[in-house]
Length: 419
Image 1 (cartoon, rainbow, N blue to C red):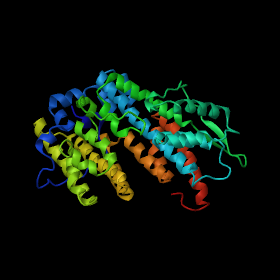
Image 2 (image 1 turned 90 degrees about the vertical axis):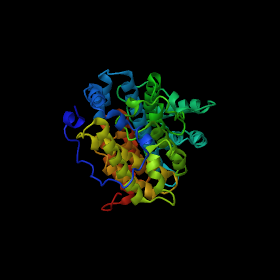
Image 3 (image 1 turned 120 degrees about the vertical axis):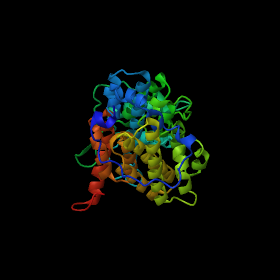
Image 4 (image 1 turned 60 degrees about the vertical axis):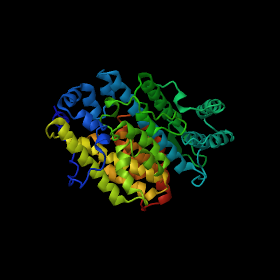
């Protein structure tokens, strides 16, 4: 049974590519890819006949959990939702800073803006900045914001501030705050950024309780999250349908935030690092990275056919996950090296190829967070909007993106582009 047969066409098939002159990665390294491990017909058949994995393929996490297939699938779902909510927190923090940061502050902004900026600083790991912002006068603050600020005073007074410990009593619907502007009669609707942080923390604790997925979460952690990159227990179910083909790739994806220096250190254990290595020796060669991503996808597709004993219709879509993995990892490297334009071009290329099983909500959210940092509220909203009805925390985070969109609109003036 094939994914394509079960769910129908997943979008336009990735472009066919010519076979590379020589394999991009060594055969022993290639064998670690989940695509090769899952390719035998009995293994793939067991996965595709499982209701939980069919739901996961569509990123219907609630249905995947409800299927009750296994603890390993449940752990993976919690890990994926942790990653999504952490990127939603980053989106909210970036939107708050882009709206109310020191160079964007406007006369008439709500008095409670310092609280929002303080939580945004926590998301970025800037605790001294957060404490300074919370030490400002709270005159005119709404009572609920003052209460939330007192809770952060207590958290920041602790010797170690860790985000996975944040816990809030979560009502069925989190009510937005209506913060009055100090000039005129307008108000800003925003959800406390702590709520999204708390959702992510709850998912982290659930994933850790089940175990085996720590390295899946590592690429998406924030500064104050535990730094867990061990891939010792990262089995097939922890990697299946992921853009990180092997356990070593998950570790590399986390290390990529250190910049291109991470490539050489991981090229012997990561397919993605091995594919990227020739393309960053003298700077980022975008043509080389594009060819490497296509070549690795082709190599994995051929190896899947060999492992299965025959060509299958879903092999190309599944191999394409490695292609977007190369692009996403390279974008992380470029961002860490300060090559923001290069990073953006790589992320857009990855976005264009994120079809079918590669349509990962966490990646979409990470690109939206990057856009918010650049005050590109238009594309960020296009990325976030389809996710708001599926994930409650995304709708909460969007409140800050809406405030940024309003600010950008006001700055643009009538009849001018807003992006």
